[in-house]
Structure formats: structure tokens, C-alpha cells
Image (cartoon, rainbow, N blue to C red; front, side, top):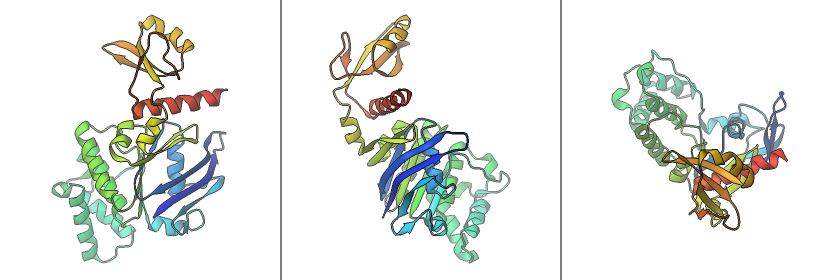
Length: 294
């Protein structure tokens, strides 16, 4: 079971080229799609979910030609978009029952069993009679996953699922995704590096509509290992330093700016950094931005 995306392109009427030759093979399990806002992640997710057509390229999910047989893909797909809404006066149980009916589960007894089972799986069983309008953000996200799971999909897409969640709800949601992703393909599209680092065996970084890095998290990190350096600067020195060095990120430590730069050899006054996925992410997105402005 795998999703194969080949040379996918998409340019919107306003001239924005959101996808610029995306090619990816996504296997069973959790796959992290990491990139900054505006990188093309949501455009790619919407195209895979058959909500928009690309200008060119192909998508296959096993034997299904996704762009030619959208109904077959939709029957196997669960999708949790970045923005979604529920009727606030309906209970979680009634909401899920409605979506189960839309998915074609017509037998009332079978539908009820499926609804209650899913509510238990996403830890909302005790709150099943409560109106969704009173749910927290994390509870709404877990209900969204239940909706995505209602048709027993083979592929699930989740777009920025932990944005705005508090740490407790975030970890609860990530644990749920980990369980869901054991037997099917789950694409986690996000700009939050920690989500990918904690969950995904395979990943890709997208920037400027292109795949700029792909592999396991450790492989992606290895490409910048030994080439990331840091130094603390006064705030008055930052602008000049950004002109002088290839600064991939700037972070505050105890109120002072620390510049992280990419270079084969250590610049004067800098100390080495044991690279992590965040360093790799900043480097690849920085390099893509620089290439786009040349």
C-alpha cells in the first residue's frame, strides 16, 4: 500500500505557482510533510483529496489513478482539513451518526456500533452527548479524526492538526494519530517540526512548491550535520551579521539573539551545533527561499 505522486504542478489564476514538480512516494505508516506556511502543503493535500485538479502530473494509490477515478479514491480516503466546522448544537454522537450515513452506512444498528466504537477510540465516549459547540479545540480535532475514520479509510490526510492545541491535547492527539497510522497511510502535513520528529519514520520538506528534502528524519538531519554553527550577538549586531553570514535561523536565548548559520567550516567566534530536525528544516527552507530570489 503506497501513494505515488509524480511531477505534480499547480498554478492558481492569480499567478501563484503552489506546486512545482512534486514527486513523492509515501508508504504505509505515518509520513510527515513539513514546510512553512505558503510552501504548497495545503495545495498538495487538496489535490490528493480530489478537491482540486493539478495542471499536470499523476497520483496513484495502489492501482487507483486518483485523478481519473476520484470516486474510488474518495471511498478509501479520510480527510481532516486545516479548517473545518461542525454544527455547534449537535452532540458528538449525532454529528458522527450524520457522517456515517453520508459514508453509506445505512443499517441503523451497524451505524450506531461504528459511531460508539469510534467515539471510544478517540476518547470522546463520555462526552458523546455533549454539544460540539462546547468542545475544546483538542476535542474538536479528535472528533475530526473520528469523522475521517468513519469509512474505514486506507489513506488519511491531516492538515496542520495540532496548531493551536495546548501541550496536553497535542500529545493526546499525536498518540491517537500514531495508533491510527499502524496499518494505513497517514499523511501529517504541518509546519510544526516536533510533530514530525516525534511521529514519522519517513518525511519530506516542501518549500517554494518543491520537495527540497526527503527520507527518514535522521537522513534529513545528516545532510546538515557538522555544518551548523551558532553565536550570540548583541541586538545591534544582528542586521550586519545577517548580511555577512548564511543565517538559517535566529532564536532568543535569555533575551539575547543567537544566530544559527550554515557553513562548511566554522566562522570566527562561532561554536558547533549538534544538528537536529529543526536545524535541517530551517536550512532547507532558507536555501529554497534564497534560490527563489536569485
